[in-house]
Length: 460
Ligand SMILES: Cc1ncc(COP(=O)(O)O)c(C=O)c1O
Image 1 (cartoon, rainbow, N blue to C red):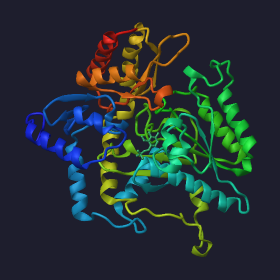
Image 2 (spheres, protein in one colour):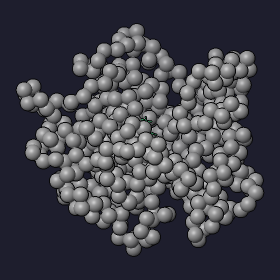
Image 3 (spheres, rainbow, N blue to C red):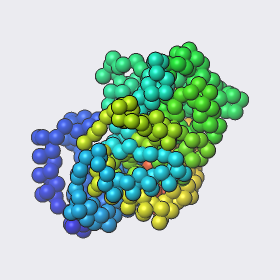
Image 4 (cartoon, rainbow, N blue to C red):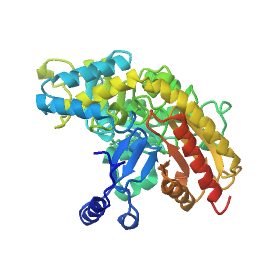
């Protein structure tokens, strides 16, 4: 049934009542949900439909994840076929779809990697932390290398340790204290350089800060550095091109593993299949999720370089195997769906498309600089943001209420946009991460709607 053609107000009302009575939602305040909700009933391309028939252009691809767009019914056929064949068996045994998917991922990474399957981006990073620690126990027996170096204002997931690895104080405050095994360094957020410097005369002070921190902690206590190549959560901070290669050099210098979070960045989002491929680095651990299946099934993975894999290889008596298991890892149905999703991405050249359409979208957003409230426009591929400020010189962020007014205006005019996750301090960037199939016309519509939203603001 296509909900576009057949709105069902009665079903909608029943869903709202049932939901409000029974569901506990993430992040949103239920008091707000009581007065305004979207009841998603269908989707096609870059558009989702409310059960009342209202269409929304989804400039966020759900939660930065529906890369091939909505309504790909062939993935339903793949899932049904696989479910008839084999719905599930634990991944202590082998299954064909997971093996084929791992082979595909290895090829996309350029070879030399093994894939450990999990179910979410948080789990993928969490497994990365554990693999790094176990690796260090194997390779440096008697040493105590357990710390992860991460950046302020990063987001790496929702479990206690991935939250701790993240650097957003407001998100963490309700759950503190944490383990203290995650040591934070300055973020490469050039528009708001933590050192008040400008690129390139800064000499990459953020990398020097990372080295200083590694030395201060003692390299012999550090297992890994985690970096999201383009920081999404803080409002799409694109680092200078040398940043990631310089971080990699530090890791090599001190014998530390380089763990990349490609949960959002991966699968075409930034204009290449993986964001690190822009920078010519060779990470040791890569967390992937979201675009791996375009969210048609929950699946994610921790991809490890063969040099890491080899550390887990040996006689059973050595007890070197991966020291954890999860029930659904390597799920054959999710793997089959992910594999076809990637085949679609390749056939339709969606990574290249993200680069092309992303440039067009960025140009459109740059035109919005005529509004004084727009302090910065930035992005890579189809991962973009416009940062809103009270004043371009002081760069004081606009109030949360202003951001909410813009997001609500867009939604009320049929366009869903996101906002950065920096809380009260840096929640002032409107972010965009649309399906990679978005058309130029749809990008125009997003820009026009934002233009109207910014024009409608009371103070500018
Ligand atoms: C960069 C990044 N890493 C990790 C995660 C966690 O992924 P998940 O929500 O699938 O656990 C997210 C989620 O948005 C993310 O943006």
